[in-house]
Structures are given as C-alpha cells and as structure tokens.
Amino acid sequence: MRRQKLFIVLLAAFSILFISGCKQNVGTPEDNAVVEEPDEEDTEDEEQNRLFGFSCPDLEDPFYTVLKDSVSTALQEQGDRILVRDAQEDTAAQISHIQEMIDSGVSCVFLCPCDPEGITPALEALHDAGIPVINLDVRVEKSELTAAFIGADDYNAGKVCAEDLMARFPDGGSLAIVECPEVSSVSERINGFEETISSAGFEVVKRIDVQKDSSVIRGQMADLISSGNSLNAVMCGDDEMALEVLASLETAGRTDAFVYSVGGSPAVKSALVSSESPMTGIGALSPINMGKTAVKTASAVLENGVYEPETYVETFFINRDNVDMYGTDGWQ
Image 1 (cartoon, rainbow, N blue to C red):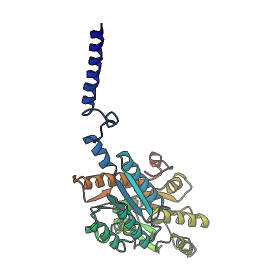
Image 2: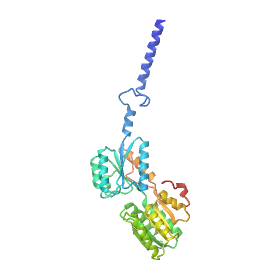
Image 3: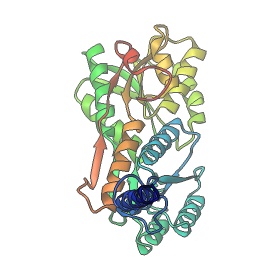
Image 4: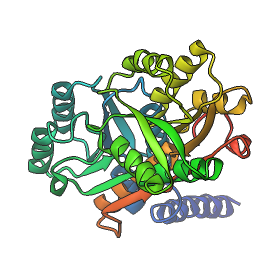
C-alpha cells in the first residue's frame, strides 16, 4: 500500500514536469508567463508596439480630424501607438513638434505640412535621424526627403464637378471660382475643373482668392451679386469656401446659382440634401481611406515590404441622387 502511494506521487510529479516543459514552446505569451526569456511571439508583439507621429496644420479642420482618427484607428488595430500634434497653421510650431517626435523615438511620421517649403528643416532632421516620412494631402517641396506621398486625386475631384455642370448647361454659362492658388491641392482641383470646361462656353465673371482666409468670401460674393452680373454657378476649392458661398447666397435670397465643392464634410452633404439649397454637387474626398492607406504604406516601409511611393486615393461625385449612400453624419 505504501509502495502504491509512493508510485502515485512520483507519477503526478513527473506529469507536472512534462506539461511545464511542453508549455515553454507552445501557446500564447500569457500561457508561458513563468518563462523569463521571451519566445518569438513575445518579440514580435514588442516590435509591433511602435510609436508613430502625426502632424497636421489644423485639427479644427474636419478633414484633418477624420484623417487623424483613421490613422489612429488603423495603428491601434495593429498594436501601435500615435503621438498627435496640431500645428495650428504655424510652421515654426510644426518644426518644433517634429523635433519632439524625434526625441520621443517615433518609428515614422505622418506629415501634412503647413508650408510645403518651410517644413524642409524638419524633413532634414527626420532624414538625419533615419525616421521615414509619409507625406499626406499636400506634397512637400523636398519630396526626396520622404518615403512616400499619399494624396487624393484632386484633379478628378474638380473634373467630376465640371462634368455635372456641363450636363446642366450644355451651351455654357457664367460662373465664379473660389480658390486658394497657394495651396497645391486646391489649385489642382480648380485646374481639373477649368480644363474640363475650357471649350464648353463658360465665362468666369469672378475669381475670389481666399488666401487661406475664407472670411473674405462673403464680401466679395455680395459685390458680385449686387453688380448685376449673370451667375449660373460657383465652383469652390473646398467645403469651407462652399459654406461661405452658401451663406452669401442665402443672405441675398439667391437660390438659382449652382454651387460645387470639393470635400464631402457632413455640413456640406447636409446642405446638399435640402432641395431648396443651391448646393449641387461635391467632388468627394475620403480621408478615411487615405488614413488606412497611409498606415499600410508606413508598415511596408518599416518592414522593407513592397509599397507605392506615390498613391492617389480615389475621388468621386456626390449629388442629391446618391448622398444617402454616404450619409450626412460623417465623412466617406
């Protein structure tokens, strides 16, 4: 009996040792908590817990807010972290923020520059530190200092607005253009619009250069309306401009001018839903898809994978017929 009890005790001890030995090589890190040296899975998890920087001109701009959220969500899904800084349209502040990111040991920086040329010193500092840059939305002057550029197909966003306008006015008409030539993405949208209508019989009766200050629009629109000039349509370089134009037309009691924009913010899509609004169509951007593409590209850059050094995210046309597909409570 005593010998049988001793045999059972020895058998139980042997079983415990056998199971412990097996668990060193299988299961999850939680299963192997007693093992001091990390296995391959532990090492991979630590490598995935990287820190990325995100710097943009102005987080009060809904486009940049959604872009930041999209990047942040995609990073969190793969176990990475993000350090966000809002330059508030101050290039010196943006340069300082990027130095902070370098000092914080970021693996990569997502950059929407305040000033494509003025940001060069920060790009040089990142290059010297061996930190890759994913340039978003507006292309920097020194693109050779970046790993990749990801933007929207801005030319097409203007083009699709022009195509809708030509369908409405096959014999041409009169229009105003609200623009900001110093912003390359806005300039590209207006180029796409104007080149498409160039031989369609349209006359530009007014050009409004906002110079990064949309508050000037209402006064200039009021002057145009009071001048008595014919006005069939207004093409706007972005949603902020379009909202100012809509407010100007509402004040003047004008609902007969067709308004086009590039963007797709909830505010502009909500205006589009109303049959009484002059809002007519949107060359739609997708900051959500841009953010997802940016994170995939950054991961490929860091992992020496295959990626496109230049990507243009698809743009498309939204009007009253299809706006319900995209909703008015968020971006597409």
